[in-house]
Length: 149
Image (tube, rainbow, N blue to C red; front, side, top):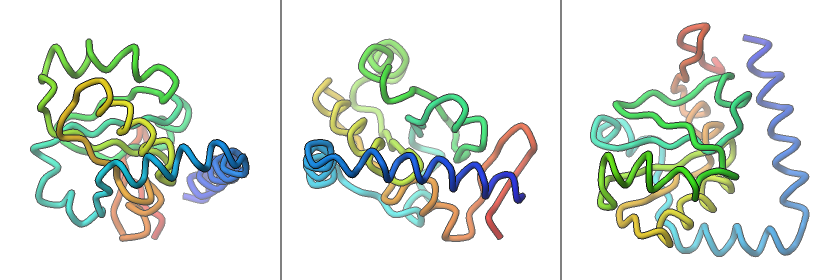
């Protein structure tokens, strides 16, 4: 478990460094205001009806993901190019979607882009996977089920 803590802390520092840029912060603030932010507890009853989209990089996804009926990994940098094919064609643009990243900003930016692409029921997991874990929830990886506790 110590390895999970170390990886998440490392990713967290990188996220914080990116948000120091005032222009990026402005974009993130716009996304957070424009996209519904869903609390982890709201996923307890809806996870089987939604598509969870993890927008982190592949090595972050490998450290663990939130389990749901449908979990897609689409790194933020490839989202626009993958979304219409992987989501739109298979599920339609009215599919219930929740995006998430480590702390929330990339997920919010991704959700805003999905809205701009025509997806109508998009929200972002408030606080990302770290908020999810802080509520004593688990994530899944090739090691099995993991938690911070």
